[in-house]
Image (tube, rainbow, N blue to C red; front, side, top):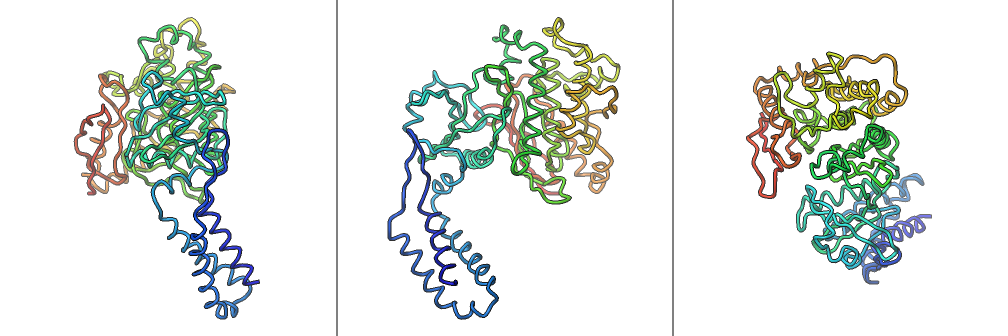
Length: 468
């Protein structure tokens, strides 16, 4: 019995280290480590087992199993501290495939600028065609960048088990020297922000009528509901915005870019986690910006901002502050309060929009963007509201007003209060002259923010923080 247990663990460990993947058509083939690697692993394990056999036999029958399991896992973890490339190549699982770098270079015409679809915060995205005829989008993550490595690992891991019509599909990945690439389904109508806000795209903007915009809202809501409640482990996207929503040939919305997403642990009464702040100006929830408190309600807040953008046709980062309305959401709240929701409607939708439906969408958006996360609906309720048009809904609180829980917390330190206020005014509203929304990153703690620093590669902002 004991010998059988040993054989099982040695066999399991040898396979986990030696076998990489079995793939198909233009993908990397299976590789095995040299034969001596197994000998090096098996021999010391066998010696260890023989020396400890008699002491282990004095325990009940289940004890050797548990002790060996613990010891071999510790040994395996030490052995797995190999090269960074080995670590990255072992992350994607399930149906995702390992593509050869040469295959992706050929598919994108050696990453030709003519095939470039856009440039994100972590690198460019290229259009490509595989030998089997599939058209794909290839994201090439920050060459030689540690941040790119982290995004690669995070996105490959999170999307490996995600299957939903409103979430972009990950076909596979490639780790080649300093290059880290992710391969997705190609979504032909590009991103929502290019269609909605581009001044050079008036024809396409007009085709995004009210019915399609409403369907985009519902599609994104369904995708988020899946991530929060139906995925194997709940996922918080952390960066829901128009540029991370893609539209396919049927105008079906697909959530993309999971580089900074987080798994949300399913642990009893756990309602939030504290984490390093990362996201985009104008879309981040106040409790997340100031306290690093992250929960699915942070995605709900961002979704509410996207609804206001869809209704108004205005970009939150380009909003010009007005008296009594420093953000696009506050501006919408002022009109909603006066029951004048149609006043914020995009003029291009005047002939196609349903007034009652517009008012409902604005109401839902303002419920989603309430400062207190406990007052925001979850995505399941949002879908019900958008689908069934209830006759009565609670009134949303004014955006930007913190709930009592946060006011009590801030009283403990007046310095923290002043710092939080300064941080909020800086991060939630971007300059109207910015070319695109700036992405922020800071340490999650009660912090005093220093002035933003302009990065050399564009209007991305980083904040340094100090504990108080």
